Length: 398
Ligand code: MRU
Image 1 (tube, rainbow, N blue to C red):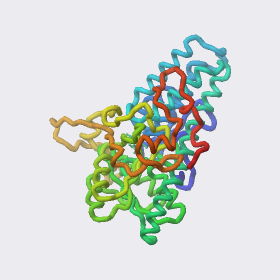
Image 2 (image 1 turned 60 degrees about the vertical axis):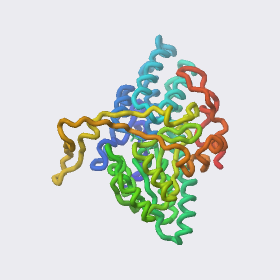
Image 3 (image 1 turned 30 degrees about the horizontal axis):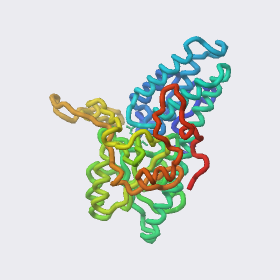
Image 4 (image 1 turned 180 degrees about the vertical axis):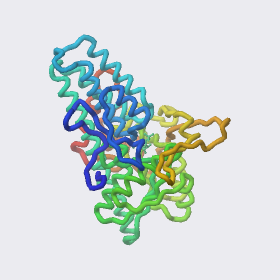
C-alpha cells in the first residue's frame, strides 16, 4: 500500500543486506513513520512479543523471516554444509518464536512450515532455500489478502447497489488492514478494493482499547488511502447499529476453528451480538493460514492471550507540544486484567471471506472451500500434511 506516494509492504529484506529484515515500527504510529532493522532471531522474537509488529498475517510472516535468520545463525556462510547442532538450534528458535504470542494461528503455521522445510533440505542449500521459503510465505500472505479484497468488494458492491449509490457504512474492530498483514489486509482489503473501484464507502473505526489499534493504525491507514472514516468509542457500535448507521461489519481473525468459531481482538464478540440483534451482516475476513483445523470448539480450545495490565492502566498519546507521553488513567491501587482476544461463535458470523471465496461459518462451508484442510496436528519437525504445504493463494479461487 502507499505511504506518502511510496509503495510499502510491512516486512521485507533489506536491499543492501538480505541478512537484515526490515519492518514498519507500529509502536511509533500514527505520529511517526519509522522503519526498523531486525538482525537476529532475538530481534524478531522481541518485535513480535513487544508488538513492534502485530496482526495475525504479519506475525506469521515475521516468524518465517525469523526462522530464516535462525538458519543464518546456525549455519554461517562458509561454515560447511552441516554444522553440529543445526537441527537443535532450529528447534530452539522455533520454540522461542512460537512462545511469543499464543492466539494467532499464523505464527505456529509459519514456523512449522519453515522448520519442516529447512530440516529436510541439504546443508549447502539451506540459507538460500530458507530465504526463498520465508519470502514465499510473505508473498502468499499478500496474495491471499489481495484475493480477500476482491471477494469482499462484491459484498460491498451489492449493498451499494441496494443503497443506490449512498455510501456503504462498514464497521471494523481493531486493525485488520495492511499493517496487520504483509499487504492489503483482511477486513480492510474489501474496503480498499471497493474504494479503488469507485464505490462510496465509509468506515466506523472502533478505537479498540486498550492498545488502540483502531485509533492509531486503522485510522492512519484509511487516512493514507483517502477512505472516509470516523473514529468511534468501542462502546458506540451497538448504538449505531440500532439507528441503521451500519450496513456491514467486517473484522479480521487471529484463529478460526474448523467449525468457524473465530478468535479476534477483545470486544469483537460484543459487536457480533449487537449485529445479530440488529440484523446487520457480520463477516470475518481471513487468509487460510488463520484456520486451525485441529480445533473445533473455539470457546474451549483457542488459547486466549492475557497481556500485561499496564496496557490497561496507562495510555500514551501526543501532547499539544508534540511530545509522546504516557499517563496513568486509574487509581494507583487498582489492579487490572487484560485479555487480548475473545471468541465469536460461528452462529453469529454471516460468512467468512477467504482467499478462495466467501463461505458459511460452518464445518461444511469451510470444508467446501478448503477440502485439503485436515485434523492432524502439525508436530515440530514432524511430517507436515500436504494440505498445509500447498502454495498459498494459488489456484482454486472460487
Ligand atoms: O494483538 P494484535 O494487534 O496482534 O491483534 C490482532 C489484531 O489486530 C486483530 O485481532 C485483527 O482483527 C486480526 S489480525 C489481522
